[in-house]
Length: 155
Image 1 (tube, rainbow, N blue to C red):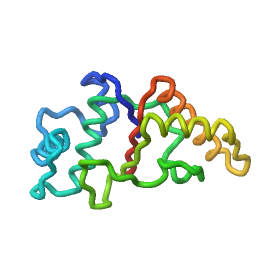
Image 2: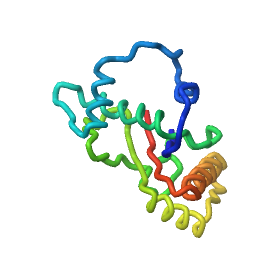
Image 3: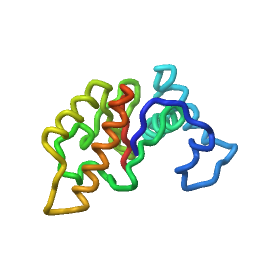
């Protein structure tokens, strides 16, 4: 998933969920969200909850960039991009488990756009990789045009 900061309605928040909207929330997930927002992670909360907490925060404050289901896992696109590798997010403990998180700052998004535009996204050996690469460039251009950062989550 690709998210960047923007307002999101509750309906949009749950649009991509595999399960129906439920009024209850896992208390440990809620505690992890609060800990991330407050900048005070707790050892009492399993580290695996923090990645999901960040994802919930991104769903609430960001929007999903339209990739037309072309990207999948960015690492499989054979591109040299920071998004292809996990990156530690300040204040978000990780045990290296799912979700795998990566991100680009606003400046890094602009750098990636310039790099990919000059390199080109053609990959004639594999049209799926070419389509995914082109979709990624469109997502990066969308975020760059608004001066926004990107956070990715992989499962």
